Amino acid sequence: MTQDTLVILDFGSQYTQLITRLVRDQSVFCQQLPWNANQSTVVNLNPRGIILSGGPASIYMDDAPTLPHYLLDLGVPLLGICYGMQALTHALNGEVIPSTDKEYGKSALEVSKENLLIPEGTHVAWMSHGDRIKTLPPGFVSLAKTENSPLAAMGDPTRQFYGVQFHPEVKHTPIGEEIVQNFLFDICCVNPRWTPESIIDQSIDQIKNQVGPSRVLSAASGGVDSSVATALVFKAIGTQLESVFVDTGLLRKDEQEQVILSFQESLGMPLHTIQAADLFFQDLKGITDPEQKRSKIGNRFIRIFEEQARALDHPDFLVQGTIYPDVVESYSADRVHTETIKTHHNVGGLPEEMDFKLVEPLRYLFKDEVRKIGKALGLPDSLVWRQPFPGPGLAIRCLGEVTQERVERLRAADNIFITELEKADLIRTSENSSIQGTSQCFAVLLPVKTVGVMGDQRTYEDVIALRAVTTDDFMTADWSRLPAELLARISNRVVNEVPGVNRVVYDITSKPPGTIEWE
Image (cartoon, rainbow, N blue to C red; front, side, top):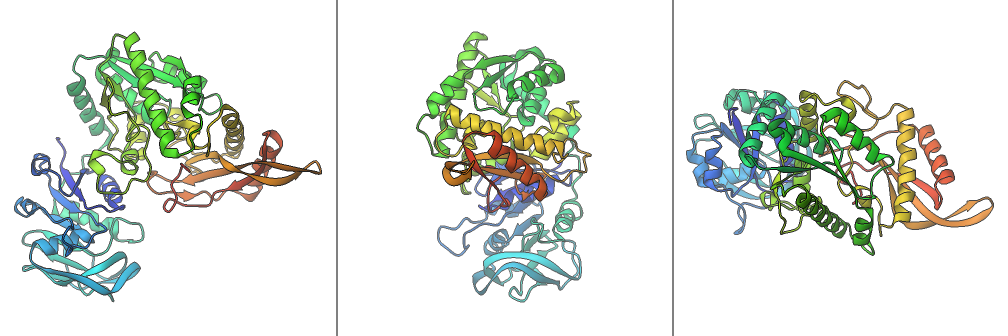
């Protein structure tokens, strides 16, 4: 690492990735690790500062995660957030107790002492805790309070240890970004050098060191993640790379043609295309559970790539466009302390035994960072801003059993939805686009039938749900407020043009509590 590094220790909060995002947004590199990561792993990163995340535990319980004591001797600033503040307090002989007045939601934060971390005045802060600090550790002073938290922030300027009971990483705390900036630049004194160019240079070095002279196979889907990953590896090792595209039969309308064209014209490299729809539908026969779908699809992808590898003189490595949200929402070795939301086929859905070692240059990047890298690599907006599409394809938008007939029905409805949004200029297509209508949009085929009336006759047919969201990082998202007239036109087209559908509904759920995809 040539740039200054922050370490974020994860105590199990679902907000931890938002801390990472906030730090990265300041052009500062940070690496997120579990709270009990090996000491050498943390020390070898030579961090300029450490942030301790929140978490669901109570520090006074016997099995609660505790602050590793070596952190106190590293001589670097520490910032504890919520549970992180309580863990820091406990480790330094302060006292944490259950609170009789739990605090959830917005609170008025009154800054009681001038300090480097929190701006003076009264501010809105987002609270989410049932425990509180009763006694500060020796050397600390109170920095702020709320009605229910007399010790809502604390600091020891001599050792540069700080804690806040609220969550500065969420947008509900308007001064949160300023607090993180103050910690980074005024307390840790980091240099903001985490830029697309530095990411590319570092990734190229890592790829070269990992693969050496070996041949590499790229799993290309045509989406922005796999395309940028492929472009990075191609820039690093050139003709050592072979790219493979698998037509699973679960693609959007005209997907195969678009993928082949974008690779040949935008990346200037050949693409081996494999027709494997029959295999995927055979694997998915009778499967309705979304986790099983992802597992079946992930396994089949690997087996196809292994077979292709034998025809290409056995490349040792497989490139995947895994990005950070995939890792956060899946079970993986570096995220064992948070709840599994869903298993992404390219993370937890992979078989335990396979012939490849994985190359994942985007594994700890967010979608917006991936797009910035794509632009810096010279990829066109048509590829960089392409609508996201999950690796399992329409299988996880076809709720219930996945059959060719049901997928074709879904594909037709999805194409109508996308086409109408394109006509209305409501799909974001570049970084400079002023369009805020949709960042991702698609149709979902539900496993239910409803009664309808068509041509004066009773029908009992399928339901299509429409989903459109606006987001920057795909970790959180808001549902798109599409015009009612547009939704009416789309609904009319779907029920008239797609056989077997007699009802259309629109999903108005944000993320959280929902995810963007339905499965």
